[in-house]
View 1 (cartoon, helix red, strand yellow):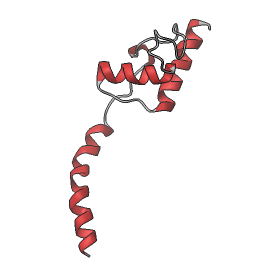
View 2 (cartoon, one colour):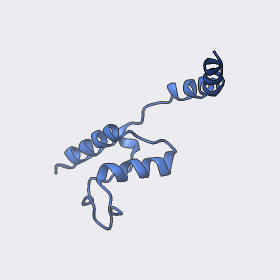
View 3 (tube, helix red, strand yellow):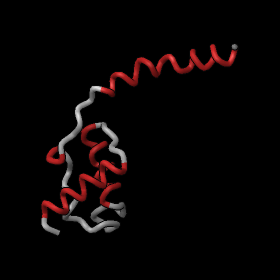
Length: 84
């Protein structure tokens, strides 16, 4: 019982935080930094994958961390739009 109460006490702040992110609008591909014109793992890409760079730049400009699958989808869309 003590563990349950301790866990409840520790988890209570999450009940306030999680709903705040549930209504966050999904970002459109047009709102993301364009990285499709860079070579992955190059100096100009800061030695990161394009998805990793997309995640970092999006966080740096908006404060939102993309998941890796989201970043891969965005970069893939940018590459397809650029005809590469």
